[in-house]
Image (cartoon, rainbow, N blue to C red):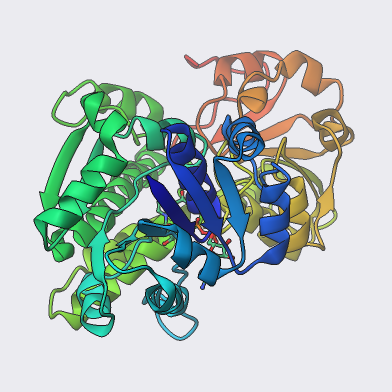
Length: 439
Ligand code: NAD
């Protein structure tokens, strides 16, 4: 089939490449000429495992093209996927739909007769129906559940597909687009517009709630002297609960979860439904950043003024260079505001971090970040940080003090190597060489 993908950011570039991989002819459309030029040259302007090779392969074969022209896209496509951004509005918690509205208006103007316009952006419930009323074209909603870091696999082998449709024809076209994915046994839910939109915001709200739940338990553990890592391990064994998303730490961030739960709460309130619990979920999440800063201060005897701090991590999660609402950078910036001399290192997100926080210091390597540090904060769960040998690292730093903001470092090993080790939601070991706790 001939498809277009409008908006070629994290979601759209992945969707375009994966659709080409499924055998379709695809044109990606973006208003950002620089992004289009990079993608045309087979370069992906962000880090996503496996994506660059896929884009290069399909741009090379001519099956995947990129343009800034809606005219070209409209003349080409039978199905148009809209993947533009829906950030938080500046004046309230609601979603800013400017890009979605513009993209639908422009492609509706240029689309061929019989084309299907499919929304994939995450939108407040009611958006698809409003767009369908406004434009004389057929519309469907097909929310996207991919996770950055696993985006290619998440698109080609998703847990489920959701089609929000009003006609059997729209369903038929979407089934044709995803035929190989469906043939592989992927579950499909065909539903109305409102439910399709809600599945996405409900899924993100559930995941955010699970993370904040375990982080609230971390707060109780801190107050009561418990260990949230052991607690989570035991909780996760209950098959009704499951172990995923029970890693206590500095909380969630990124371009989706925080703004999506706020927009959902806002939209529900417009509909007369009180989702106030999601405000608590958000508040617990933000408190974990405060707690990481407080632990850092505590470890340094009450003040961070003039302390040389190494922050390990800038991306909001591993396997991504996305720094949107990154807990790591937020904590780093706060340490800087308290007078610490902060040096950040991340394997992939340095350029984005520098653009977002130009006043922080940056190291070119892990070793450079650690050298001379008086405090280390582990804030993004990259494998290379998890695998640090604490006996190697202890020789580089000036003071061996570490805060594990992701709850994955082995307290025993770090303590045995001479580190003063603290982690969110876990009791303090008795100091370097002191009483040993199970890791
Ligand atoms: P992004 O900011 O990386 O990409 C958005 C792209 O849209 C940009 O390249 C921008 O230039 C382009 N754009 C804006 N207005 C345009 C227009 N009128 N015409 C053409 N292009 C336009 O955002 P993203 O992370 O890819 O997210 C896009 C949507 O997908 C959001 O609604 C988000 O919530 C949702 N989503 C994202 C993810 C994810 O992991 N990033 C996962 C699922 C859903």
